[in-house]
Image (cartoon, rainbow over all chains, first blue to last red; front, side, top):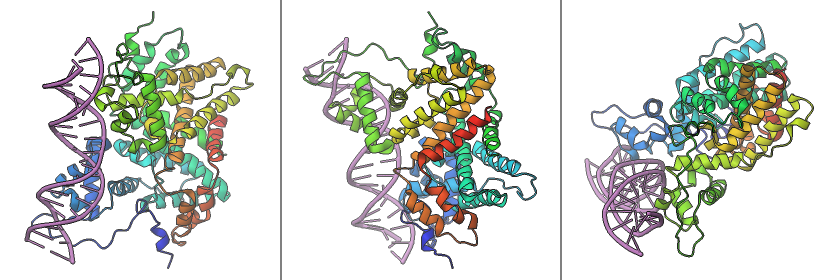
Length: 232
Length: 232
DNA sequence: ACCTGAACACCGTTCAAGT
DNA sequence: ACCTGAACACCGTTCAAGT
């Protein structure tokens, strides 16, 4: 019915429907399929992080070789697009129609997305560099836009609101949670701020605690509430 | 006076003041120093992107070898921290005291930061994964916090507001601009949305234009205004 | 016809050997 | 004492050779 070719735009990096699943003939071992590869890849990324994850590591976990992976994915980037969409598929979608106001509904969706991202902090660096156009990303986008349009938002305003809130959630999450493994932790950063030259950095020192020790969820909700209130 | 050791916290990845500049003896060639290395590194990252940039490429541009770079930086990550801080040093700081309201002042600072990030889209992926604690990052933070405290914000609220706005600017920029080189461009994405199944994705299709063709600056300002209005 | 070992052209990092 | 060529242990990707 709908133009299928438009769903597979030029670059295979967006969302490529690969050709028919290859005949698996791996003696004794479970057959490789895209779902299983993505499952294991996500688990590895969650465990060791994007930096350490490699196709060799993935191939070993699958008892296969790196060349075999290229029969299912055109590149590592394309595999990562699938991993991101798998994570987006974990967002718990509650029934939006049953929620009184659109403010509550959009807040609920944003917090559900945030909660999922918190469970996969190592995936966040992958999410910021792409517009998620996998099936789950599309579904999420459609649901939120439908909600806003259904409450009388003009299309332009709905699109802008979706972009603002969506970028806020993902951008905030990657900056707040993406540093979890790499950079300094909160106590170290607090000590760093407190040890600064009090003549040059009095404001930073006085605000040091608020900059470092606010619970993640509360810090996130503060800015989200500002956005939602502003949309009124 | 102030505790210098606290300004060089444990991990050298934050902001390491390297030992005295090494004696340069590179026959005929200009001496290597940190400033020059960072200048050339930034130019290369701007030109070819983070993915393509490599220490070998940098060493060649400096007419040196990769091993020599390690006499100035402990790792590639540490070099990148300097590159990020160099970019933050380009933010044009206007006189905040002369601005009527704190709303105008914080909007002005956020837009100055955004304008700088637009000139260095390839640096953005480096910025999201670290809390910027280089000299320029510290100065920026101090200026904004001082502004808010000076207008009577309680320290906790000032810290939360700084985090919300700062994360919004950087998070938005990386998602809006960081895909410039990699992913699909706006016309491609528009065509993709329009080609979706109209039964499954009616809201996305109707909002397709607003999701893809809003000018960057306007899209950014929309969400920023929501945040600032909400802070009232 | 399908799979994959082995190679290719890289990478960040290190250190023994040079000057 | 300072510098760096060359190596080390990787990486993503490819393809000719296997089954």
